[in-house]
Image (cartoon, rainbow, N blue to C red; front, side, top):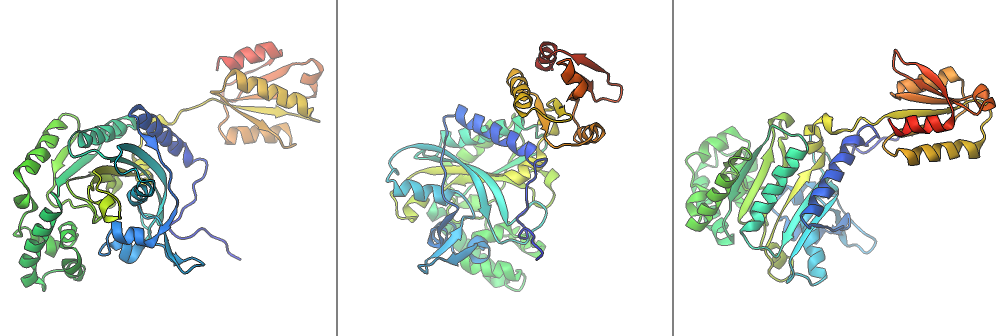
Length: 414
């Protein structure tokens, strides 16, 4: 049998995970400093949750959900995003009247065509501010993202922002856009014709050149916004102007039906075609839509695979690596006593105890292959004088025979 991983669901090996661990640690530290608490929700949810939250007209629900029937013939789905699950959890616990600052992390699933930067199993970290009305929450979330990007050493990026108004604003603009486009169905791509009848707003994000050319003469979303919303949008852009490149993009609508108010997306040309690595916005109506009480809400998600591609390699710590090589018949208790004491003395050094029996030449070859800096060798001769051979594995490296106290001191000072 030819056993392979599912297409679009890659394995992550130890060498891949060095950056992951740094990113996860950086995120947890940042969120903790802002008083944001972690929440964990199931991978599986009722399919109805995503039909009601993400929207029946979205590609996620129509084409990309991993859905199947359980033994009770109930349709369940692997989660394609995190916000709906968080809101569902808050509603079930009857906490919509409280304020929450929450973050989550984990795998998400969408049945997409696998390509660079897009997988069927991918990982997201998200933040949700619940119970906070439009105002300071937007500033704090955007400031948090700018701080995180700086900590990760990412230089080239741009934040796009827009304001979608309230539900009435979205409906009024959608109707105007539909009236404008209906006489031009022969110019619209077939995908955009389908969107025209399900969710006209999504046409603004069309990648078709003919559609974009037509939209140049179409009604503008900002013409339907209140003066307060327009002023607020401009104030945000001006506030962050000296911290990053931020632009107002009137075509930015995001891919999920529940967004109202401020929306944003962070892109980088260094990622190629799939250039977005974070996005979010306000969704004050989602709790009510899912059967809960009205609750202000805003949040964002970060695609971990994409942001890891942008992270600076300088963040990966170059820890010293030492090979512990015991030759001949091993005294297991003594060997592990040595390893235990050394590891306690300097936890910032990687001590790799070579457990298999082999020749010294083979052990040293392995140590060099895996880029160890030093080796501690205990052979028959060393055991007789209760000493340890310390070997520098660099090309011009030397070696010396040490008593244990001297060895311990050298190891502590690495």
